[in-house]
Amino acid sequence: MRPNAASPKMDRVIATHEQRRRARRPWLIGGAALVMAVLALLAFRSVLRPSVAGAQILVARVEVGDVEAALSASGTVVPGREVAITAPIASSIRRVLRQVGDAVKAGEPLLELDKEQTATALGKLRDEQARQQNKTAQLGLNLERALNDLRAQQDAQEARVGSLQAALRDEQYLLKIGGTTAENVRQAELNLRVADLELRRLRDQNRTQHRSAAADQREVGFQLASQARDIQELERKLHQATISAEQPGVLTWINDQLGATVAQGTELARVADLSAFRVRATISDSYAEALHPNDPVIVRLGSSGPDLRGQISTVNPSVDKGTVTFYATLDDNHHAALRANLRVDVFVVTSREARTLRIKNGPFYQGGHEQAVYVLLPDRSAAVRRTVQLGASNFDWVQVKAGLKSGEEIILTDTKDFGDAPQITITE
Image (cartoon, rainbow, N blue to C red):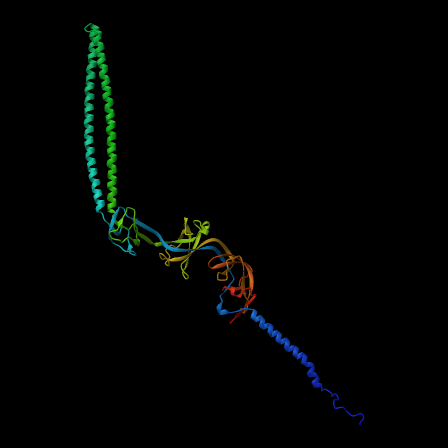
């Protein structure tokens, strides 16, 4: 046995570089884990933050300007003046002379009605007038004969009264000289009194007959005048049986059914003056109380057409199927873009905010006074969610009361798909 023999498992000295490598190893592992954690966090945040391509969104800049709050209505351009022509007589349509769309002049014939029935009625009226005139002449002669008889009786009675007056004077003279009796004088006085009463009766009858004759003549005159007016009116209607335009314009409608029976007052045609227009609009009856004559309106002639200003002229008081109809006159009622029956958008201005912050109206606007919008960062790489205060609005603009500054940009596109994400990434 060899004492102090060396053991094969005896410890060896570790090299310095190996010691350093082993010391750095925990730090490397920790650093790698930290990098992986940061990368994982960034990846997680990228998953949470929604993104959208810049080409898929619309943006608008906050600016200073006017905002007119308005109610939206649908409208139709109509002629400023359209005349309805009605049948002056009960008749039937004999001939149509013009067609819808024709330009016509004032007094130009449009259609003819059958005049035979009216002409027959006119002939009967004239015959009746002739008979009445003959009766009037006969009545005049009879009245003149009766008056002449009364006048003759009155003259005769006046002569008799004069004779009796002379006889009374003679009897009174004879009584003085004793040539007659008092009885004869009283008889003469009685005869004279009776004759005076008869003369008074004849005079009263004569006056009464004159008044009665004057009243009869006036009555006959009234009848003749009434017949003359009826004849004149029927002659006028007969003349109007050829239906003519009452104003220059365009024929917008005509009853072209030949032989159709029409009653007096039935509409036969309409002629519109297309040199001026107005707008007939309808709006929900829930806004009826907000409509007043002379309220300003804006009329938009299509998506690319001009905006024309005007005011409400009349508001129909009745409600039809939940809507109210009103008419608006235009400041420029003969604009070249106006056409009859053109569909237009009508905005009734209810208030006006001058020199206020505003943003273009778009899908983002939810109609409330407070809502969240996405505001673009200056580098346009992202948009952050911000709650803003909004005010008056119309089809074009929304008033900004608080939460935005002039020059900032927001996303106009509907962002409800992003939920309540605090930020949106905008990609190329």
